[in-house]
Amino acid sequence: MAKLQFYFDPLSEPCRSVQLFLEANKIPYEAKLTELLSAETRTEQFKKINPVQTIPAIVHGDFKMFESIAILQYLTAKFSTPDHWYPTDITKRARINEYLHWHHMNARWKGGLLVVMKYIYEPHFYKREVSEEVKKASIVALKSTLDIFEKCFLKDHKFIAGDEISIADLLAIGEFIAPDIIGVYVGKGRPKVEAWHNNIKKALGATYDKAHEALYHHMNDIKNLVPPIDY
Image (cartoon, rainbow, N blue to C red; front, side, top):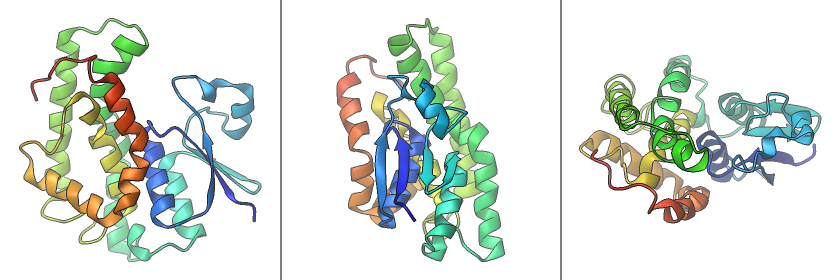
């Protein structure tokens, strides 16, 4: 079968989750950089790859797929990756699925993305006015989401599903570290979250930094756009 084609923007949290998985499992792929800020997903050419015009997306031979969670589940099966990523044990898999169902409307929307949108992208890139009240509300939403994440998912575990890293951790960390770019670190005052973050970095090694290189550069580019935030 032809090499997997991976359409992504390294500044996108869901894209980085898939990239981390591909790199950690040494799955060969052809990188198809697709920049969101340049509206490259809105072209007619990309619409043939993904009619919904979102990323990440993959093409694997004649097979096309979008949505990060579905892609990760496909990759675990297609490439027979180590069981800990998406366990065959029904109880462990159920725990991961529990998080995945919660993820989109919570960690994805009310986690780091909301904060970054309100403090950076809407006012500085999309030129929309955002009140201080709305900005502060995004911080409140992030804290509330982290409270639930700690209490209901992380608990006293090293990772979401227990002692080993899974696709749930890749998805979660992408969202929760997004506010790093404006100086908001979710591990502040949350030793369990900080330990979890460090466990992920240890489990992934150099792969973690490689997948975040573009984000680190972006952080440097925008560091003067937002004054220090009380978090």
